[in-house]
Image (cartoon, rainbow, N blue to C red; front, side, top):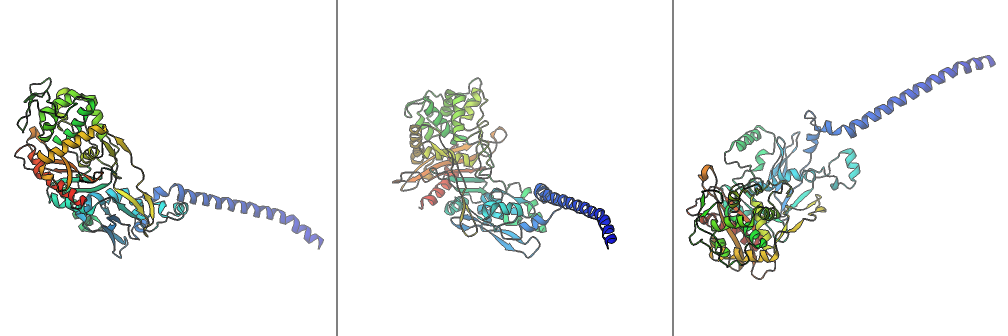
Length: 499
């Protein structure tokens, strides 16, 4: 018995050592597997998820309805169950009306505008939607899609779209005292639902829309810049008043007609009569090019640029929350080019949203509130996830300058070129504009109108609007803006005022 035990003890020690070594090796292999799994899941997950060959992410993304975009508390989007592998497709109510705001959500072509900038909320991927955000980050799970509540006014949006009536152009309207975007319309438009699925019809619609010379998918309100023409004279007048170049809007100016551009033999003339040495007030009401071109030169490129940039020109960072094309005022110009820039020509270009911002700053005593389109985001049950946050406010001009400009703009509507924008029972200020374009200015002019309005007994302005109509008929310089664009602005303002 003792011999057997001794033999077992001597042979068992090497065996136990081998077992321990095998266990240690297996432990190392298991640890390596765990480390590699963690590396794949945490470090390389993005690469695998983004790999075009991996359809799991796309399948998961479309396994639940997308959240909705709301206007006046009601959804303008929806989702339909196709019972296919990519189960839910996006639907749109009044698609062409809201396309510049919603953009599209396409299984084939991705997302644009609010569908893109708020995709995390709408798809359910935003960690803020989850009760345990860190856990969702690890599991990469999706919560039910949340909703995006916009600042839009349905009445204002419909009035703008109806006013354009299919003509090329755009409308932007904002609340001057807050920066809330009330309308954002572009025409011609398209139905985003045409691009929602992945059928052959979607590819055909994509090709047709992109090949259309009228560019229905171009968001003219925020992604297209135009020469603003005489509507830019609001900026030039602000610069002249703030710089002290003009101290009395009713005093006569030293303004010849025609005006020879400095350093050239080129002369500038007017469509209106009686512009020789006329006052700033009369020049503004009847849009005398010669007066404002000379004023821009007298103010100088430095102060003109500073005022334009205070209004938002040359700012490439504006987002509402999707990006806005940069409106430009060229600061590297000679005096002749400055004269043309000061009447909204040469290299001066602006989006309709930018010109609505110009009118809004005048209406709100020289303060410019950064425009925004999203009021808040919510969970599916309506619980607020994020608010609109704080939006920068800057003083664009001296309040007294803004007060003088308000008087000038009300004069345009009361007895100048913008009488068709008048609204009974409301105070309305405006400025017409006709912008030349094309080779040697051979294209039909763009008709512009910028304006603001408030009830007669109101303390704050209610709305500021910019309208541009492309290729408008123009028998006379400023009549185009007053005839084609002003009535559209009037209807939008009436909608906001509830008249």
